[in-house]
Image (cartoon, rainbow, N blue to C red; front, side):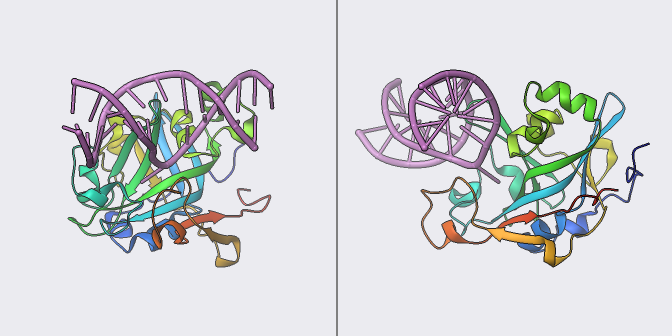
Length: 204
DNA sequence: CGCCCGATGTGCT
DNA sequence: GCACATCGGGCGT
């Protein structure tokens, strides 16, 4: 029998309506849940990145509101899903107050439920590579542009994050964000990438 | 209107 | 380690 798969409280708008780095840090260890064909497909969040408003030159909102990034300017607790490199979808959680364009990119999860579906979606990749990248996990959980703007604080949207098990500071490391080499300092080097180094048995 | 390039992933060398 | 897929956004002409 799988363990640690009992549905838990869904993270509320209050959780997301905080400083974006705090939200990114606290999302580690929480469980991203996608309801697909009435089945739960989920994973523990192990890596995130914070993008902090128009001043942050790595943020999609740096040049102001556009059709693509509009959701980032809306209320916290909604999904900002964008298309990139002509083929990939990436999932973010809008954070902070309405009008302030901040979001947390979900970069990696550790599969928990619906592993059969995930394996089908990701084959022929090796299991360790099923969901260890922002576009890999959206492919695995069947998340695309249809979810842009969806409220992730209710199960009605078939996409939400549950409180699971908080990760202690001793297991969290930070680093510069990925793929923003052309962004000027200090933004390029801000340690706004959060990584959970979960030991074997964390999910048991 | 055209050009550049991106919060990436994959497969091949 | 590296080239390349693949296309929309953003900006310059």
